[in-house]
Length: 443
Image (cartoon, rainbow, N blue to C red):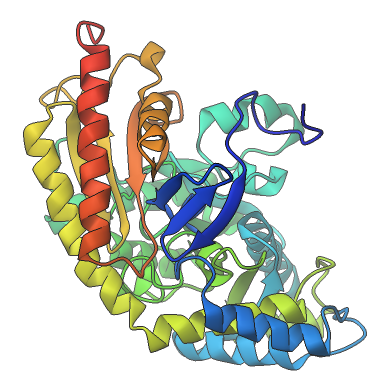
């Protein structure tokens, strides 16, 4: 019996300890964390420098409410993040997680519109499939039917445009015309909704759980920026999963030299050591809101000094260990190894990703892109098999959460060649096991 209310009835072993890329349960079984938890533990587990920074802050203070005190830790982390952002993105608002960061961004965008005489702007366009968080506001911009459908009567659904899944549409992702094709759907949607009613467009620069490490086609990001500028629409980059070095740059948007108006981040910023996230906004958005009476929003733990001290230490480790560079080098190797698995296993229909945000997608037929039968629950069954082998990976359903199965392979950024060998060997064993298990059941 457990008094904890989990998401389902399944139970897992009790975690005993975690170090680097490994975790051990109470019975002594070792697991390789091939997904960084939920793409969180970017610098690995139990980093001694982060733990030491947390102890130092604990000796000073563990809490200071933002309406009562400023804290050195929060000021230093805000300055560090501003220095890592494009010029002008230098106003930081701390939160405790990704959903809170997305909520904060939408509320800031709305309050800026009100403060600047644009009260008609209230719609935030997003993509489908997409995932931006589990609160009602974040779900409103999420395009993932299995998560949103139960709550539709409780929220205001926002407009959606298709995610740029060129591989499913048989389009060349390296052709700029493909990027323009998908971006122009945003332009058409803004026009059909009425440009004066559209507040912002939110997207993940590289897809996360909903699209499985989807990399945008050539020209897409730049075209999106042009369209937003043309219509006075704010561009919000959801870097909750991609930020803090995951794709090989501190922010994934850097790969396309595309400047957002607002960045939201979490996961790798706290790296599993503390609940921590941030909204980083252009000063031109924040100043009118403050002049109009202040930001009507906030969370109790916003800017918690212990969390911020940990976050600053996490960034220090990313820089000191050259983890963005390592994510690039190891990510290229991992993608190549996954492509090798695809050559051996027909069940893998696509391999994609950037840095150490990688995924492969199961298909019943590569030519038609037909997914595996929904009844097989391949995304969950494969994860269970790998877990039994001591390899932790992450999965979701690619096609609106209803069907299509992808497996995310996103180890901590500290991985080396030996770790990659272990990951790929675990995947190979699990693939053989799973394909044997479903033989004759695919039709």
